[in-house]
Image (cartoon, rainbow, N blue to C red; front, side):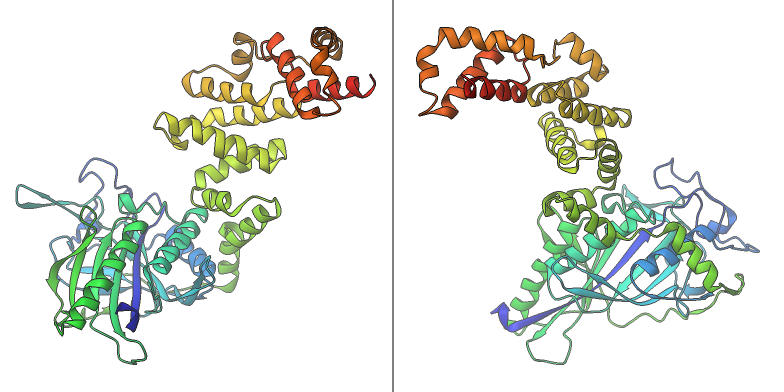
Amino acid sequence: MKQNFELTIGIEVHVVLNSKTKMFSPSKSSHDDTINTHISPIDLGHPGIMPSPNKVCIEKGIVLANALGMEISKDIAFDRKNYFYQDLPKGFQITQQFKPIGKKGEILLENGHKVQITRIHLEEDTAKQIIENNEILLDYNRSGMPLIEIVTEPCIRNGKDAALFLKELRRILIFNNISDAKMEEGSMRADVNISIKPIGSSKFGTRVEIKNINSINNVEKAINFEFEEQVKKTLKNEQILMCTKKFNDKTSETEFMRLKTTDVDYHYMVEPNIFFRKISNDFIASIIENNYVDLSNIKNKLVQEKISNEYINLLLDNHFLYKQFEKINNKVKNSSETIRWLCIELIGALTKINKNINDFPLEKFDSIAEIITLLQENKINGKQAKEIIKFLIETNKSVNEIIEENNFKQITDLNILKPILEKYFLENKKMLDQYNDRPERVEKFFVGMVMKDTNGQANPDITMNLLKNMLKNG
C-alpha cells in the first residue's frame, strides 16, 4: 500500500569549515585535540567580548554558493538566534538569519534529478556534549567552530535521492577545500525532515525530524524505515506525532527522542557587535577564480580519458585517491594503466591485508608511476609488477632495490631469446607441426617454455613477436 503515498523530504546539513581558527574568535578550530584546550572569552560569551568574522570562512561560503549556482549576498551581516541550552554558553548562537550568504541554488544528481537548495548560511557551532556516569560534560573546543548550514527545499522524494544529494554535496565540499566532510567524525551532520501524504494530495503530512545521522548509507536507511513506519500508522489511523527522532545504526530503526509541539521562536535580532560589511563583485569574482573547482569539468575529463563510471565514482568519492591518480597520470600519460595499477592492483593488494589507500605511505605513490613506466618500456612484466607492489607494501625498499634483489630484470635482447626458441623448436617438432591447425596452442606452448627457461625474466610480448616472426619465416 505504500505505493499510494508520496514521501516528502527536506534536509539540513551542518558542515564544519576547513579553517585554522573559529568563526568569530582566534581560538584553534580542531575537534581532535585534548578536551577544553582551545577556548577564548569569545567562545564562552564573557561580558564585553567583540566577535570578529573569519574572512577565510566567508570566502569558503562564497565558493560553495557559487558551486551550487546560488545568488551570492553582497551584504555580510550576522544575527543572534536566542535560546538556552547547556551547550550554548552565550545563551544565543551567531548565525545569518536575515542575510544568508547564498540563496536559491540546486544540485544535479547523477540520476538526472535535481535538488533545490533554499539557502546556505554561516554560523558558529555549539559545545560538544559528552555523557558519562549519567552526567553531561561539555567540551568547549567545539564551541564557536565555523559552520555552513545547507537547507534544501522539501523536494526530495526517496531515500536514494537523499543519499545521492549528500554524496554530491560531499564531493563539492571536499574538492573545493571547504570541509573534510567526514560524517563519522561530525564535520558533516545531516538532519532529515520527513512526511508522507496520499498521492495527489496538496496538504503536507506531519513532519518528523531525524537528527545527526552519521553516514550517507544510514540516511537512506533512516528514511526508508521512517517511510514504512508512517505508512503503517496512517493505514491504522494512528496519529503521527511531530517529533524529533534519532537513528539507531545497530537496529536500522528510528527512535523517539522528544516531541515538537510548536515551532520555536528564536527571537532573532541583528548581532550588534559585528559591523555590517558590503563586498564587491570584484572581490567575489577573485575568490571564485582562485578557489573554485568545477567538478563537472573533472568528470568530463575523466570520461574523455575513457575511464569507466565505476572508477570515476571511486576517484570522486576519494579526493586523496584522485590527487594520487592525477599525480601518477601526469607522469605516465596513460589513464587506463594508472587506473589498473593504482585503483585495482594497489588497492586490491592493500585490501587483502585489511588496509586501505590511506595506509600506503605518501612518498611511495611515485613508485607506482615508476612501475608503469618500466612496464611501458618492457623492462618488467605484469606478474613482476604485482610482486613489486607487494614488496612496496611490506618493505621500505625502492623499486630498483626490489628488482635487483628478486632478479626481476626483463630479458628483451633478441640475441638471447632467439637461441632459446630454436632449441625448443628442435626438441618439440610435433608441436611445431601443429601450428597451421592450432596456432594459439603452439604459441602459448613455446612462450611458456621460454618463460620457464628464463625463470619468468623473458619479456612475454617481445618473446611472442619474435616467435611469430620465426614461425612466419620458417
